[in-house]
Length: 450
Image (cartoon, rainbow, N blue to C red; front, top):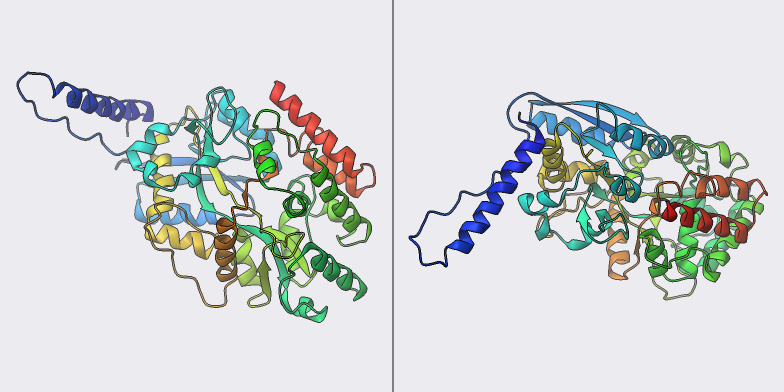
């Protein structure tokens, strides 16, 4: 298989030649045959080994890789996995190494684009017809020239699925504290938390260990969207000029979170709990509620079949709109990846192949994205995925989709002054709600100034 740069150059030149010939056709010269269509990038027929970095605790990537090899036996995988926080720290080094990844889970994008470490995927948009997909699927992965803002400019990544986040609940325990239907307001939800504590139950199971990244960012962002508008949150994540996370409504959200901490709604050892442990403990019956995403559906269905339900976090007032973090598992291609065409072909296959789309739903629990005219895969009766897919339609209709506050800058989640250390300080009583947002905003501005 030829080097991707050469192959990419071939089909770029072919496209350009086709356009040029079309333009010359209006001139009074003898008619010529049109140039042949540019070849569609793929993995070829020669043996290919894709080097990939996946995130620990998310089996969908490996399941998709296995199915891809089953359909294209010439492609094998060298898969390495790591925790989200480690990927944040190590991704720049991996992308500049002598053996760069063909495909890598991206915690953030902007700084990597600024430094020229990610491959510009815009040529593939035309080659694969991604410009015919809903534009909302591509916006999270676009970065403007110069690195900001995100949401505009060329495409630098693709998604394995399009997730929805919210609140999972233990059906038996929730019924035991009087929950007959999902809470309609924040006040009702907080009433359930108090009832769970009074009943001697663990109200919320959550992770907040540094290795997994501050999981308390999930309830905090839900509180932000419940108490204030979604647009300023997205503008901050996308680095719009003048954006700030330190707003009155976000301070109120952080104050709610602090009250939950002080009331004992989270485990005492939450700062030591990692993502996989939190999910295992919740599926085992420890915790009435947990904040997570639909990527966990398959594991919950396997560990606690029929025992767990899902609802969108409630608004502050009756009849208010719902909001949810909804962003794909983001994967990019190193600027110097040896098998870039094959990696891009994989990203296209994930969204368009029927088997891959079914895996997205069965294991990822999420919408597979791709062309809007493709049917959604079937969902097993009784699976939590039925609830999360229905919820995703509600939040989309109400324009409540958010990216994750962890994705704002390269250091904002785990770096000094970022969400993880400051949320851990809030748990430990060493930070205030006001100080939390001030510290994160200062870190954000420092990142933008670099």
